[in-house]
Length: 489
Ligand code: SER
Image 1 (tube, rainbow, N blue to C red):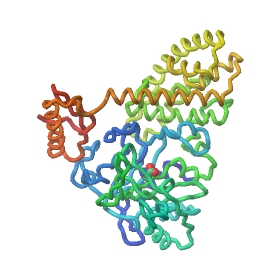
Image 2: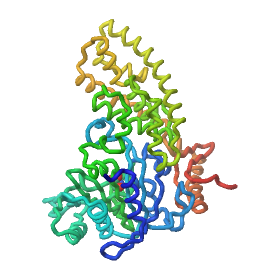
Image 3: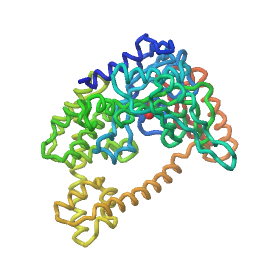
Image 4: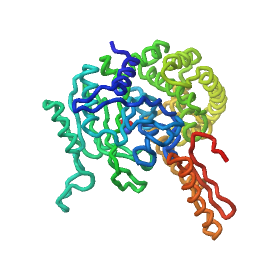
């Protein structure tokens, strides 16, 4: 059996080796360590969801991989072609966790090129790695089929089909089935509210999409219009867990060697789905805490709190024992994992949760005895006042033999949550409104000075400098910016 660690190593070796592609290209990628789960240069996203995020400035041309210091490495990448294994987290999949293929935290294998090579080599590399290095058989591949044909205009509107990739795949293997799909399936990005994006070609093995190869040809503006980038970039992503499931021939990612040691530590009488949720969340907790996230009621801190409280309802699980098992499993590959810190943070949150739970359950008992129904807002009140996850509320109701219509409860709860989030978004949008607070002549001067200052910072420190926030009034101007080192006088 090929282990996950071997998969990581094979991937890095393949792309960093000096070997060539069928068309004579030389691989020789530079290995770049994973960036933090908390993105340093992308304030519009809470967590790192893709390997390309730390490379955004190279795709847009804002930074030169050969000359400009990388944001966190503190030196230039020194190569237009790089390879990484990126710690990634997708909140969008949180409710799917427990099935065979979804996770919150995962590891993403990726090779990237910022004007070094194009579609031909990217496709040939991927084909060689999957079929020769791993010996897998590709079911089929997909390519971008273009945006729909508009009969009124007599042409395809928007992004044209990726005929080049289709042609390359035919040359690589003329027996391969090539499927075509539109914007929803074969177009990727951007992360956050703007950034590089483009058509994709995807590789399917055993019915699973294993590899997503993106050709970053466009920049999507905040208003969703696309502008063509000067240089096309290559951005690929292959989830290690899914690849491991395919290679190790198991039906679920939770049955790979990445999860077996964690699942083995869980009480045997837990339901299968519960075991998977606990295993996924505990792994995510170890990585989030080690990357500096702390449980709180906002943003990324709230994501962590939700994961922690979700698993705390399984009071038979020996967290003290399992958290270090997870940290040990990954410590050799990822820097900064800290078992003591993870355990202490978890225990601290557990104490807070126990207190909130005790208070919340008092309210629960009082209000249900007055005839209040969980479905009619009580569940949401318990969540918003005491931070009790809805799963805890349902479990508590069961213990008290209170009938709950779970489907109805979740539906109503989510409706209230969406409304609540919309309201708080509007409130915080007002609170953090950037830019000018008024249009006084002095404020306008400060605003102009703020632009000059940002331009000067970029000239002196490099193009990686990005604005992270600003506040401009008639009294003062403030600009927050990103730079890996302390700035000298
Ligand atoms: N950015 C693309 C993805 O996340 C390919 O790496 O799937």
